[in-house]
Picture (tube, rainbow, N blue to C red):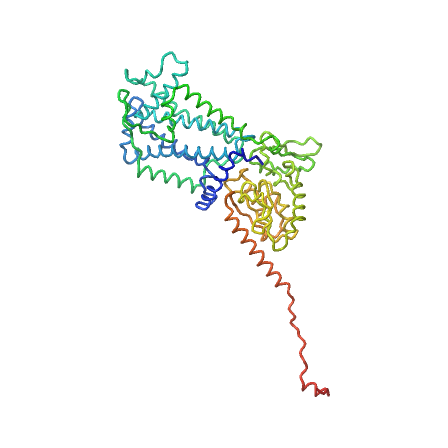
Length: 529
């Protein structure tokens, strides 16, 4: 389990959990867009590639503004495709910003996730630079102001023999090489995006690159409808000899322009450098103190049977299968500490309990649940709530919830099914397992593998001897106490009904009764009344 980030972010995490809960109620956890900002950004990038390819067929370097006007005049194609290109790029910036903020305030920027964080920052810079070149390519007043501001900032760096700003004073026509350079960068930089996107997900097993089809197509459909009904307007053409009265800025890409234009170039460079340095140093200043950092998993090779299940289930490809060196045949699991985030999913997948983080392996869990059952002694009408530490209404730090005993887990993927079996066979009426939302698991695949082991026979599976009617699995975010309360109360009601039904079945009905003798029969036998 990774730390949850600096305490300064705690109020933001709490606010984020309530926003997530609201979106869960509106869209359901599977289609909650806040959980899928990364895949949404990739889907929008693909839309940009498709629409941009069409637009480049009609773009002319020698007449940039005029060619965009011709595209805008294509009422049946060019106009809405250009607008879809613009709106998709704006939405991509929003998705990237939300994705980055979520990762930062939830502490997912250090340790084994450092590469993903750093490559994500580079991706963000590339997307903003692609947008810059795209606005300049139009060569309207906004593109002109962007080009002039870029030239002013570059002139502050003493690497050019002549000031670049002289190019934009209007004394001579703009050189074609300038437009070719923007054209080339606008086409070439997406290749860099593809490269860093590969690095961004390179340490993930089974990365989800696209959102669910229903969500993805709905988003594209809404942007297309917006492009058709409210097409993006084209600003006046660039003219170095005229100072525009109003500059139509795109606030998604050029939000910084009103501030930087009022500052000396060196101040902009220093301020931007400080912000960039702070962002790139986030893996250092967001990591927990050394004593709070969880230790990576390790393998007890005497218990490892080489089944490869931990290798298959690890979401971060931190486990590999290597030839044994202890004289036994076959393979043995080995953990790379540099890639392990200490999620403990490997211990939940190991039937012989031979792998896992220190203190959270299968055998440690058995010892812990024994102590829990001795202390709490749940009865046949009691419910035990196994709560994820990062979801489940933030109940992991509490003892009870609606009369249910709370049993906290760092991640439901870490849960060994033997724990559930112990609870049921020890007399607990029911076990409610509350995980993170399926698309917002702290460790990516915890709920997925937990459900597979509990109900679908995945190694290490919950044994058939366990009554499944007493085991229930639900998804609940950190801010979803209301929904979790309903689930707890519902399971408690079903357990009580079942207990009553079983009690009625145990009642032995006396179908034979002693019939008192009839007076006439007594007289016949000579018995006086």
